[in-house]
Image 1 (cartoon, rainbow, N blue to C red):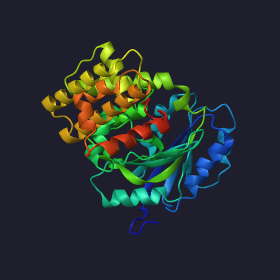
Image 2: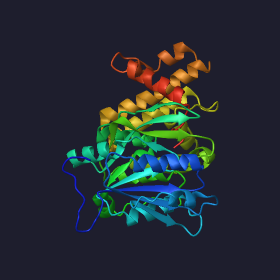
Image 3: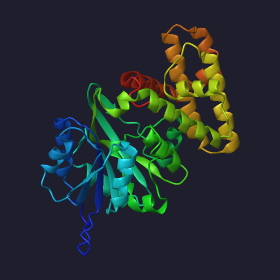
Image 4: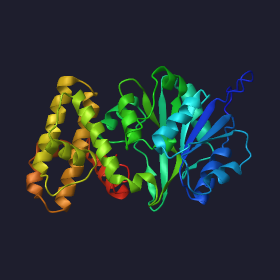
Length: 353
């Protein structure tokens, strides 16, 4: 228990509402997820589980846990995760709302650490955390976006937030009537894009969740649909910079943001696009100039190295580019190389969003 945090005994309202959506999850995964929440060191929570009309024995598995903190909601028909999450968040009574996925494992101190952080940093509206991948892929997702301005800038390019690590300040959710877009496939990225102008979002600088990677998870099965949805989010954010991109530019921007390459897009086109982004942000002043420049040059560096490895351009030509010289400065090079290695290691696991 975190010192100084108490349940309101008059209303029996828990301080934290954990919202978890479930649909046809393997029993052993579902049990691991449920038990990881029930075993939290911070015990003052309600655990809202929304089953999205599963066709297996999921409901029976959930009901087998007799813990009074569990609140089971059942959709009459399959409505997808955004609907289920909205339903749970509307009913949440907590001062904080924590998201959870039915196939992941929260570390025992997850809620304790996040609540303590949010209590200390009263200006933070949304707090995510680092995650450790296990299963089909292994590694640690740690973007190190502990400052709101850095998170805001990074979100322009991709989704650096692992959704089941998120904790919301409920007052922020209610004040701005925040809901997931039920028509979006990349619903988490779409939500964060709407929060950028009004919220302070940051990352807790330690791992608080084990994120399971397996072929049947939604984010893997619907990769192309999520990519299309994420592109619509990016197109909306480009409008903040006064850019109305052509279809060709949307394609270039997609590869620029996702650390991927296309045989149809040259590095020269990529550099021209990077310059346009820098100029547009200078004119519109949407993102902090230093941080935005860092992200743009970093993404260009990754693209340049990949073009070199694929033997699509000569080193001499790359070195003559102004953005290359900026990336290779002692101030930036080590960080950009770490980003490149990180990108290759994760192999685009989150960058499709």
